Image 1 (cartoon, each protein chain N blue to C red):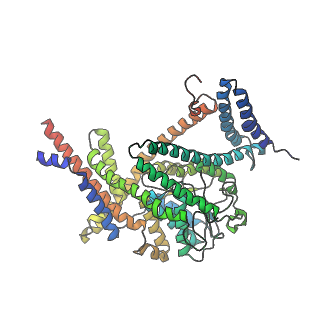
Image 2 (tube, each protein chain N blue to C red):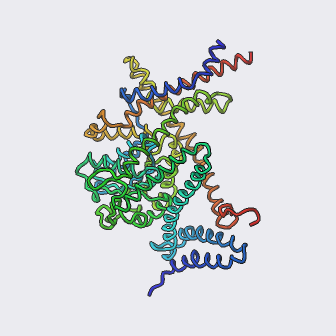
Image 3 (cartoon, chains in turn yellow, purple):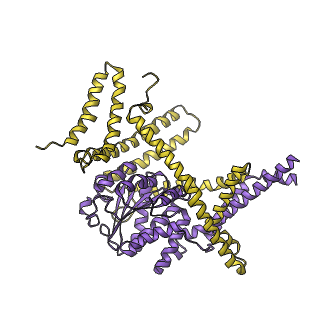
Amino acid sequence: MSVDLGQLVLVLLFGLVPIIGIVLGLNSPGLRSRIPIWVAVFAGLIPILAMYVPKSFLSGPTGMSQRLDDWLIILAGFALLLGIVNVLQNNLRKIARKESGWFFSVVLLAGLFVTGGAGIYGALTKAGIGFNPDGSSTPFKYLTDWFFQPLQSTIFALLAFFMASAAFRAFRARNVEATILLIAAGLVMLGRVPILEFLAVPFPSLHSTAAGVSQAMGKLTEWIMDVPNGAAQSGIIIGAALGAASMAIRVILGIERGYLGLGRGE
Amino acid sequence: MRRFLERLLGLDRRWIFLFVLLSVAIPIIVPIGLPVTTTESTRKAFDFIEALKPGDTILISFDYGPSSAPENDPMAEAVMRQCALKKIRFIVIALYPLGGLNLANNAVAKVAFEFPDLKYGVDYVNLGYKDGASAVMRRMGDDIAGAFPTDQKGTPLARLPIMKGIASVRQVKLIFTVATGIIGEWWITQVHPQAGTPVIIGPTAVSAPKYYAFLNSGQLVGMLGGMKGAAEYEKLLRARYPEMARFYTSTHDFTATKGMDGQTVMHLIVLLFILLGNSAFLLSRRGMTR
């Protein structure tokens, strides 16, 4: 019988080590908090090593890194479950205490159960959550098409009204920086859409001039987006990436422990 | 004058709301047909797909929800139509949890209806939704079946002719992510550097500025920025394939080209309000300093 080295190491690191840690941690609180740190260290180091060490047990099709990716997908599913439990807890408490707006919690939970129920029904009947074989909609798809989609679109569409109102009230040339921002925004707004052509619609003699100016505005807009915006975005992205990398190193080295939810001194 | 300025600065926001409503609704009901100029990033995206050969396979990832569907839907549909015309195969997935799958299902059903010759499993396939976007992407970098063992109908990937020779995203010629948030960026930062597969993105206008950095660095082949990008793509598509006009001149369906009419009037209204607000603000400030 061949032994899968990667699988064996994973079982050791993520199965035996935590179990031993839990057992020993019953009498040692310090050890109990150290075990999750070691799990995080292993989980962080394996994908990095897999990038640099071309060994099949580490980076092969069924290597440790690939198996960790599979686990990550499963864990993401459980995170969804955790979210549902959290929504349930918060809203049931709100309803039980009759806090202000408790009725909205009832509507939210009704939506959760009805939609979730339709999804589970689709899974049990093997109809799924898309179209039935005859082309009709499954209950889940019906709910998504006629409730979820219009509601989400409506909420987002409201932004247009508030943005226009905010632009009128808050977008002011109060200082030099705000004035530069205002001018750049105005130029981009002009250059992204054919406003001049729209204004020239009643005046046929101005059509070609409007088109020419609009094209020049479009080029200026592209330059603003490409050069000053592109440079600033590069800086922001590189800065954020360096921040993320240093945070990852802190987690892998066990310096950053905030994710454990430990109190001070634990 | 001072009273007028004060009244202008204290304008009831409901007037602004009314102007916004009219500026969006009227051009949708009565289209103006304003011209659309194309930008380099959209042309690059179009030319890249045009350069693919019949039988090549691309991956289309629906990474957006209903909130940005008017911007993103036309992009996805336009690219799928181009693929159908050029006999390019496309694999559809959805990674956005809030309705991405439903939008993918609707768009695929629409294009499949428009092109009855397309064969499911041969010319296109819908692998459905999987939670954990970045983890799924990483898995697809090595093994698509590891992330999506079956298609949405439950057929194992090994039984689908389209998946023959496509084990991972390294074998697809292009990843087209139609994105509303961070998921689109992950294709560029996590999949492209490791798998080497070219990426084209169709982001919302709000998130488009960020992607210029990736365009400049060569990590992106092209971009369809917001509704304008989608309208540009529709224009390029109609120019290259005149038979596509039937999809874009119909009064029945919404297209990005039609949406641009409303967006143009809306931009004009917002610009006017900014101008009015600033004029009143500067005049009132000058009055106060006197």
